[in-house]
Length: 469
RNA sequence: GCGCCUAUCGUCUAGCCCGGUCUAGGACACCGCCCUUUCACGGCGGCGACAGGGGUUCGAAUCCCCUUGGGCGUACCA
Image (cartoon, rainbow, N blue to C red; front, side, top):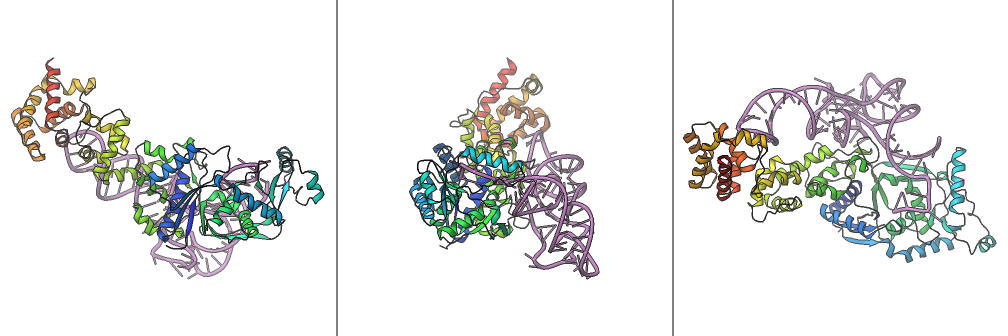
């Protein structure tokens, strides 16, 4: 076990989205590689917006992706006493102060500042209030503000972006405790990251601007400052922040659409990180090869096509047994019960090269499990006519007698060709239609074999009676 | 507006730190050909980028500066 301690700290105000998942993944990989500790912390200080449903959704998504944590989940809502105490400490040490300005006043000041072209920052009205003033305001609601150091600069060495420096004059006195007594993000994140012993804070790019203020809080509280690594954002195709407008952003939505977790993991890790020209990585390879040194510094655009390609790859190379079990679930979602049909694993083998998602695979697998096949009118007129009767009759005979393995089936078709005097092209397609209900399906021998003798004979019989009727 | 970050094919990126081996490599997508019992898979090939301008240098995608574009922040959200 090394000393590395990292965390993923989502706020439970919705499902786990693509961006959060990537941040979680990067943290997870860093921890596993260094044999360090991966902590999960739920940032639910905003009581209004946080929900249990969101917490569950996030936990589910992480477990689906295989991102298990070593400690947690911790809930910030369980730790309010700690934050209160830390706020009190800063208050007593004169490093924070009570501010009585109302939100309305603040909004007005902000607008005024904007209008005159100034930076919209807190003007420090309550920063140096005398004791008498505080007593006079004793019954008024107040927030607690952190007393930011106004001079000099704060800089840190970002593991991804290099040295980043801020002029302290840019920072204003931010609120660390709301008027309802609850603490705010920029404060608790410091207290928790410090109290939980984190030494690397790996998070989204959108937090770089918070970092200098947070560093000042670390210092004010006497905590060691951890290292920081800010990973660039994920954007939509229009280079705007990724949102629902660009398509699904929820991790679990991808599962529902028939994606494999390893495809999403592989896609996400390559969004920003690279290892030479390599594209395909198993989780174990990622744990071995991942490195912050090769994480890019600029935002990247989410490309659903490439994700699809990776999913296709993992379906193609996946274990049929495992995929078969999953297929059953997707069939069920489409209202198809696989219980009395062919072995799902065998079905998978015939469809692995033909499906980009498990949803697509389930659609293509439906015919294996549905006895009543709906024949498209045009297809029926072309392939299921009296003209084909001899084919089906011959096949019915051949199939009921042959050895039912690949060679035997192939041989049965040879017999049919000889008996009817037709070329394979004339026999294959009608048979495919008769057995699968459509013109596109896996290889006809495979279909016959996987379907099994009984079902093949049944379907051929049904077709013959239709033709005769 | 101000601040911070950032900039190689349409997209993800290699190369950049340690200038020459880059007539810039790979992948997705797209196009073409081949394979083929349908649909696919697969194989081969093609299209396609160093944002612009200044420097530094014998030499710059690689180093420096400016411009422009993009992202983020600027909350009693996280």
